[in-house]
Amino acid sequence: MYGRADRIVGSIVDMAGVARAKVLPMSRLTSFVESGAGASPSWSVFCVDDHLAFTPSYSVVGDLRLRIDSDDVRNLGNGTYWAPACLSEQDGTPSPACTRGAVRRVAERLASSGLTARTGHEIEFTLFDAATVEEWAAYGLNAVLAQEEFLDVLLSAAATAELPVEQVHAEAGLNQFEVSLAPADPVRAADDAVLARALISRVARAQGFRASFSPMPVAGGAGNGAHQHVSFSDGGVPLLSGGPGPHGLTESGGAAVAGILRALPEFTAVLAGSALSHLRLRPGMWSGVYRCWGLENREAAVRLCADTAGNPHGANLEIKPVDPSANPYLSTAAILGAAHDGIVGALPLPDEVSVNPAELTGADAVDLLPTLPSDVLGALRVSSLAQDLFGPAILEALLAVKEYENSRYRDEPVDEVAQRFRYAWTS
Ligand code: GLU
Ligand code: MG
Image (cartoon, rainbow, N blue to C red):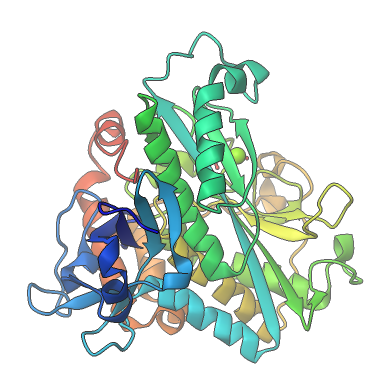
């Protein structure tokens, strides 16, 4: 039974990676499911600073509905319930601007080729106002014990909300933590990533901290990544293990790696496209800025985690360039669509890089992902794969938002921009 003040929050993620929400009394749950809550189409062109990057298709006129599914409702505690929302038109049909819908479409595309994907998200964040700076070591036991209460409340909230936390650790940066989530069906996994951020933000607040999900919370410090893990199977048979290729890759598994590597430049705007992202996307940051793959290579954009006893979920690819400014639905659609393209085209697996790519020079040198706005946005603008996967409605909004953000903030002093947007991606 719900209490009189219980409420249901439905949220979407916009092109800037910011979650935006409507709240209804729990007694109106059926209405949230069947009719939805109103939202201006301009929600799709909100930028990280709340500027509206209007385009010919996104203006002050029109109405969309945020609709939830009662099967997706999660209990956040204290009378607050949450569900991921889809954007639909007033007549109930799905809106082409719905990014969650883009993941569904790409999953169907995989299914039409007999393929299934599973994805999993890593959530890195930095706690501010945490009085632990004297008790901190990267991956430190001291760091996690000093935050015992925060972790206690967070894990209990995760259990209540059915968020599948796999592990938590102190990351390399001061007061930086990571929560890793279990793999799931791609829509559910992206929903989990949104939920995780909401729970972490909420528990941090309740404990007197603030959680930052900025790719670069303090200029010159450690970056927050949002690495995504992905695996594929064909009729239940895994593509990333048991094959004749390197480390057990099958031919299709190798083609998936090749497809992702091929598409990374055109999707950098989707995976790490904020005006701060380039500060993290650099060699030595373990952010996968090198456009290559390698077994357990933490500087490679695609890190192969092979099928070993130490890897109970089986072989998977970790896509490292993704940062928390990415809309997790769009990053998922981009990664899965690129892999599918590689598989369908039977792309050959490029050579593995099994050293730190920074050591390779001359003819062996590995390309870096683009980070200049003109290159990043230019590659997305001409991407036929992006058109195909996202559709013109999403692409128009996405480009307008990323173009505004980069032209407005990219040349401002980095410490000011980092400070200004430190909590922009906090829920
Ligand atoms: N914080 C790093 C990043 O920005 C990742 C460190 C790690 O490999 O977990 O991607
Ligand atoms: Mg990490």
